[in-house]
Image (cartoon, rainbow, N blue to C red; front, side):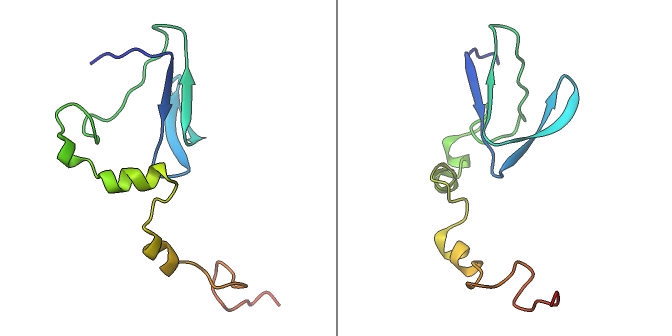
Length: 98
């Protein structure tokens, strides 16, 4: 399949995305915005991906997609369960550094 665009935006589930630039592996912050001259950029994506060729609309998790679009990858109830109490450290309530 070939598509053409002046700009391509690649978003992911996390804050960073592993990418290859000129055959070199690197990590970029999400979303990755690519702009190029016509015919000069090739973007490779996994064959089996949501919304890819051969998939149906039912295979896309639209609730998850909406949460990603709104900046809430986790449901609010799950995010609240994992929230830290005020004044606690990421390691937990006990601080041995004193």
